[in-house]
Amino acid sequence: MESSSYILKLQLITLFDSISFGLIYPFLPPYLLVLGGNNVTAGYLAVLTLICQLLSWNIAKDIVSYQGKKTALLTMFSFSIVSHLLLILTGSCWFTIFGRCIFALTNQSNEVVKELYIKKITKEETEFQLLIYNVLSSAGYIIGPVVSGCFFDTGFPLICVLAAVLTLINACLVLAIPTEQDDLPSEGPEKTLSERTIGYIWKAADLTKKSDYKQNWDILALKFLYTASFAIFFTKFPMILKTNYQSDSVTIGCTTAYINIAMFIATYVTKNMQEKLSSIPAIILCQQALVVLFFSMLIACYSPMYPLFALSVIPITFGRSYITTSWRKVYSERNNEFLDHVNDYVGILVGLTIPILFGIVCDMIKFNAVVLFSILPVLLALYILNKYTCDFEELEGIDKSKDD
Image 1 (cartoon, rainbow, N blue to C red):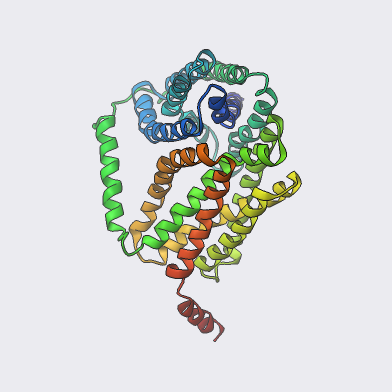
Image 2 (cartoon, rainbow, N blue to C red):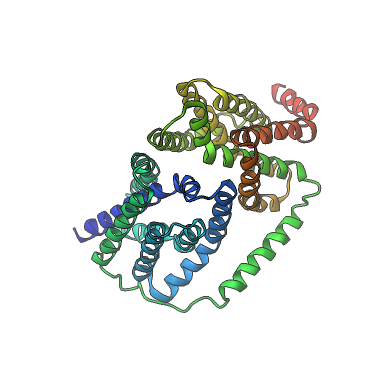
């Protein structure tokens, strides 16, 4: 009984934490525009929060080491409440970004909760309980945007109040769970945060060098291009809705939830697709997925009716999921074990460069920047793939040998 109550509290913490995040993230960039910022300002928000997120895992480990898991959760939720309150109290773009950076630096509560959660469940129920955990941790990406869409026109500070209240409830739930006997502070890491960060950068540089990037530049460029395309389309589609359909905040919030649902479904479906299509070279399937993405994004950007936009999102999300999950198989065909490690670094590079570049261009050409940054990278990726990556004669030879 005590264990069931403990698990229920952790499940509620997971759900409320997810909703709290889902309330804020879709409408924070538009809120910066309301405060007088521009698209470059929104780009700085994306880049700075990414940098903070990269640092947050080491910071969270330090907090857990020095305080134990339960106290660490209280500390993280305290910082989250402060972050939400800063968003309420300030009318400055840069102070808003500062407040969000505080949140990003300490936002690893879900990982700590998951560790406590796994520790309390039996081996027999692990699969089922983890499914519940994943559903709860994803629910906020559906509930949050819908709720914040309904309240955004009333005032973004009200959304921040809701997020702060949910986080405060989480802090109370943490106080209500018993402290485990082995949940004690321990010695911190031997290296400081700055030393570990510098070590991570040197490791990334070393792995990139070993990946033979000059020889494998084409698939690294492909990774960069399709990641950039997805990043812009899935974060800037509200501009499409406002320009083409004069959509209000409620529609944008519901569309965000709809896209998130499509992404979650696509993640599970594409795993089964990969098994059934395993006999076909991964690069060919990625090529076909890019073609589908190109035409689907054209429809999404220029469709005269909202239902057509909503339908076009389905192949885009499935294509994104398939390419993302298949790309490591493409790396393996190059017989270079270090390429797989560089995969994440390319994604980080996109996050550090594209948002600001997009912001600069978007302030000049407005809606057309969304079209340019969504569709042009896919076109360039198809060109590189057909010109440099695909050896069609070799692939035809593989198919013939399989037929024989």
